[in-house]
Image (cartoon, rainbow, N blue to C red; front, side, top):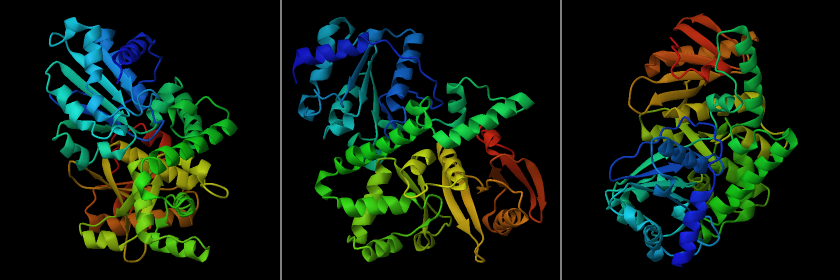
Length: 440
């Protein structure tokens, strides 16, 4: 790697003005002797979150020269081997020799995981007490034991999702006023926009037609860059992959069975093995495109015997790429609630009673504790809908030992008195702004 080129890259980055940014709620804290990684779907705001961190550092007294940021999607760096990564700190300290071992230096690397064997370089940097390392990337490998092992446990990962509703209204300058009549009206309008547009930060000021087209472009880029190009040895069957994508996206919030998808594909003349389809699904999860929710059970055997439900990283993205007429509003709302629960750090499952009554979400804190049961319904104005949602909760509360039960709707709020106790019904625009609502 040419030293002068690297010096130019470092200086050019330091001279760029920092953009005006909407504050993200994901907190980043450096842990001594550990790298810090921010991972998430492509275009969800990881690079901007890193720049937000730079702003925080500058506000606390850090000099801009003490931040060395390198973007590995730069065409000049895409072929750099891991053996030459040490040229980065060589170039930096040739610019600022007085800082070496005297001042704290923050190295920020975007998409460094593209370089095979990059982990050893990060460990080399962390061996110097004055160094801090922040990594961003669009692969879940940065969260897995594979990376933790390569970094010898010296990586502290954080996952960034597209805008939450709180961040969405902050971006638009709307106060989180859930009390006053005017505040509630504004939040209802913002929720309608949020459901329609989703949370990808770079698209929120675009007309609806362009917004939808760009979401489709986002998806195509994820498929090409984060699935196909990221797994060149997999020899992905494009026809089978696209058929799987159509089947999964059209089933957002619904039961998903690879066996049934494979059967349908075979009937249509698309041939592929179930092993390949499971692998393709793993690739999409690895790229943060999709997630699946398991059946809630302490038994692994029971969990694997039951179908999974599939959710997209962003409901508007799913709607934009779904075949046919897209995703209906209720399933978009359900996907939105799923993403919010995951953003809040819950393990999310679903539950179905022996009588076939289904609870949309069983949200379990990772720190332990009783699960929260959540149903999602667009509206409860029809008696049959209300009875169905309540019946599933009543049948599940005692068996699962749940202490909290909740129904999230588009715009209804009430308390339902049931045989299992009171059930709080909350409008989504309020629930999304309430970190831990008292649901029972």
